[in-house]
Length: 435
Image 1 (tube, helix red, strand yellow):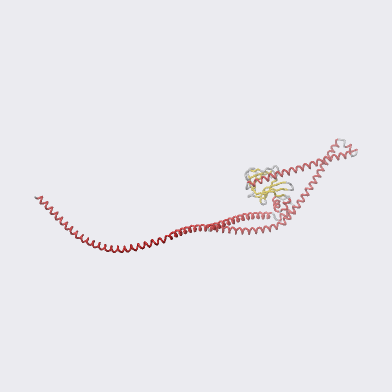
Image 2 (spheres, helix red, strand yellow):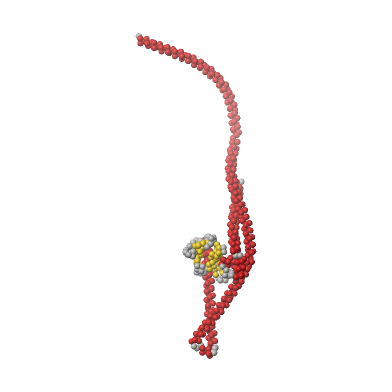
């Protein structure tokens, strides 16, 4: 029975611990959820429908400031699909070097924020971006010349020459710092490969332009050979040779400008197409803002109901704690009662042992009662003899009193006789003296 009660108490304690863990996890989850909802509401309040309309009218998404652009990239998945894509994300405390002293660190965020690597497929470039609310605190394009150095177990830094500053990140663990450093090295190598590819393309383009420039003078020479006699005569002088070289240079420059113009036209067309896609995405996002607000209202209501449930769970946890205290008190009381029960059982065992001795004690009692009866009879006889002795004593006392009186009289008489004898001796002594 005791073992079963102990097992039940242990099971109850385990259930209470599980309830406490669940309550703690629910509290932490919903606290994070409420923070995320508040951040999303603030961002939607900052970027209202008027901002969307203004961006659409002026067609200024491409030239918009970075916080707005990254807000749209975080909200609209189509824009993210067409532009930059996050390839790695972590959380850290962001710092910047003091521009005046160039020695002290200045915190750029009050708390840990998300820091992400982004890859732009159109430009083939990599960037580190971190946003605190609506403020961009890191916007650093990674170049092959950059280096990420670990200054401590949980802190690292890198210098950005374009932004003319040094960024520092404080991580919560060494593993996060190691992963961020490895990713930085990978992105750096990828940026180096992208730069090498762009240089190879530029070299190939320059080689093509040089080959086209070499082909033009051959055609000019052929036209001069197949020309008239006046043209042949004109090529004889030095001035004609100078003009011919200048003409060749001009033709090559024109051809190169034509090729560049075609490239610019294609780039302009791609930019227009991207701009049109972005405008369509903005229109879709402006149409979805109201639905997002409705969803946020529903989320707020759900968060309120969840907070009420959390309060109920906390009350239940408090009740469970009180029950646990009561159970602990009851367990102490049960232990005390068990000790008392053991004492009572010991007393019962002693009484049982004594009950086995009772017949012997009864026989002894009967013998003792018989002895008492004989003693009482003897006592009565002794009392009778004592009364006779007392009478004898009284008679002897009376006799002694009479004898004392007679003895006193005799002593008085003896004293008188002694006095007479003494006087007689004195008289005899006087007579002897006289004689």
